[in-house]
Every structure is written in structure tokens, then in C-alpha cells.
Length: 401
Image 1: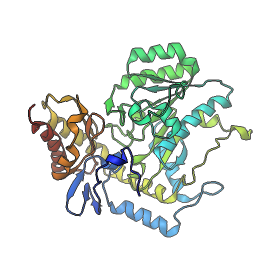
Image 2: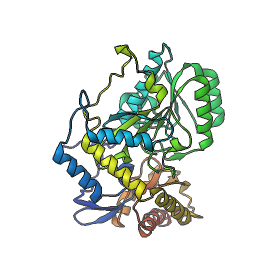
Image 3: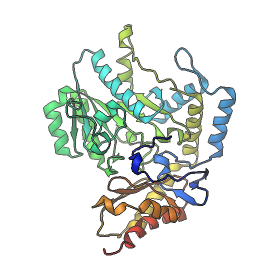
Image 4: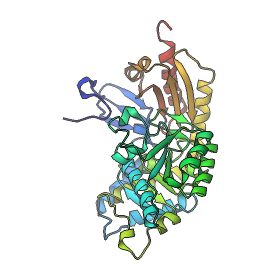
């Protein structure tokens, strides 16, 4: 019996059973539908990409996994070197893991131990209102979404402060607690599971200045925003953090893998003659050679096929398709890079939309008060139009409004 995510099993509707997938399409026994959410935002090249499949198969023919404890291998060496060159600034030191949540845990642990290693007693963490960083325990503490993390008490979160993405709140919290923070973690520009909230780069620029001033480790959780999703390769290209966390599109969704990449300052805080200064962490499947091979090929395709131009085209087309569209049920329409969001006033008006979209050849998965699309980057114009039309038609066909 499968225990499915984010659902009350007693009331769960039968999930759509996928029998095949190719390009941007998912296939059930009797239907073909565009995956408008890129399978939780990771399938940037779509399904069944021949080059990625081949890279993974070739590696499996050599060996599928070896531990990184006392061993190493060519795919992880190549991926580490590639990320060193691919990422901005001095984000050079790669610590691999097997999921975005674990990679965030590693980032927070790095930041906390970095302060301990240098004799600091800092215990507080700064995060954003409506943030989401994963569902493991420290990630839940860093997050701020009762819909996901209601099991935590106020006492569990006593060392975490959350602020809105407003300049006054940012300035005030650093004036009050700046010398107590060991880290400030953000989903840069786009807060995903917390409601597809979008905010200004100016907030991050000022946050970087304040982190410098108060000697606070600045962490960018780019698990969702990395690899072009916001219209930037990485938001870290615009504002440089001390630690960046990548997952999801890192392997183009073909296999689970993630990485926490630290700058020289953080790495040097662990580089010591003292064994106790070492980072004592080691996921079993970190640096998995099949995952590294998929990531290397995915990045190669991303660069070679000029995906940033594709993403710009998606954003421009979405802008044109939603321009001027309004409806009494819709609170706001937002878009950025490869993301489109319709936020509604009342979540109940989204009940039934998933099946409505399915019948019209689109897989969608609204949540909270959000109807959204996270487009695969290989999507064609007619497929973008089909997705947006289905979203708009749901509202225009509502009776009695």
C-alpha cells in the first residue's frame, strides 16, 4: 500500500496512472496530457531525453554506485569541477546529497558549525514569512507554512525568526538581532510551495549588505529557483550568497540528487588540524555516479541549447497570453521566467480543476489558493497556449460569477 504525499489518504481520489512519458507529455491508458508542472518543477528537458538516458545507461554499465567515504570516481569529480565553473563567484566546494531537503539540512548544519568552529555562540536563524525549505525537521523549523509544518510548536521554532520580504522588516530585524544570527536562508525571488510569491531583487541586495555587516552566513535555497526558473540562470548570478543549495533540475528530474555548494570562507572554517572541526555528515547516496552523469549531461544541454533564450520566450509568451485577463475569483496573476501563478480569493473555487484540466489534455496540481504552471523548457508555443487557455477557461466557464 502506497502512502501518498500531502493528502488525507482516507479521502484521496485515485491518482492518474502513468504508463509512458515523452517530451512534455504524460500518458495514461486513455489520455495524453501536457505536464504543466514539470513533475514538481524538475523535468526541464521533458521526459525520455535520449542523451540523458544514454549517459545514465553508460554509467550503469560501469557501476551504479560507490560510496564517497574513502572512494571517489570520475562522474563526481567532473560534476564538482563543472559546478565550480558554472556557478558564480567563489561557490566552489560541493557537498552532495540525495534530495533538496537533505541539502538544505546540510546548508544549515554547515552555517551553524561554521560559527561553532570559530567560537561563536550564535543560535538564531533568520528566514522569510511563507517560506518552504523541505519537510525534514530543521527544514520545517526554517520554513513558515502551517499547511505543511503545523506539527511544530512555537517552542520548536524559538530560535527562528521569520520576516516578510519588506525592506523595513529586514532593516529592523538586523538592528535588533543581527549579532545573534548564524544564518539567513531564503528562496531567492520566488517562494515556491509557500504560494509562488515573488519579490524584488533589491531586498536580496540589501540583505547581502546586512549579512556582510553583521557577519551572517547568507544561504540561497535554489532547489526550485535554480537553472533558469526565475528567468535568471541562478538568482546567485545577481546576488552572491555564501552557500547555494541545488536540487530538482540539477539532474533534470531523471534521478534524485542535490548539492550544497559553499564558498571559500565557509569551507576554510572547517579546514583544520582538529578532527572536531570536520563536517560530520555523509548521505549514503551522495555523489551517486549515475546521478552525476545525468547532471553533467543536463547542464551540457542547458548550455548548448541556449535555454535562457527559451525561458525568456516562455515568459514573453505568457505575458501576452494573460495580459488584460481578469476575473472576480482571481486575486492576482503573477509570472516570472518559467513560472505562472493564478492566486484566487477562495481556494474552494479550485476544487475540480485538476480533473477539468485532465479532460483537456493538461496535468495540473493546484495547491492552497494557487493554480500554477512550471513549464518544461522544451515546451512549444501551442502547448504553452493550451495550458494557459485551460487555466483561463476554468474561470470564464464558472457559473453564477
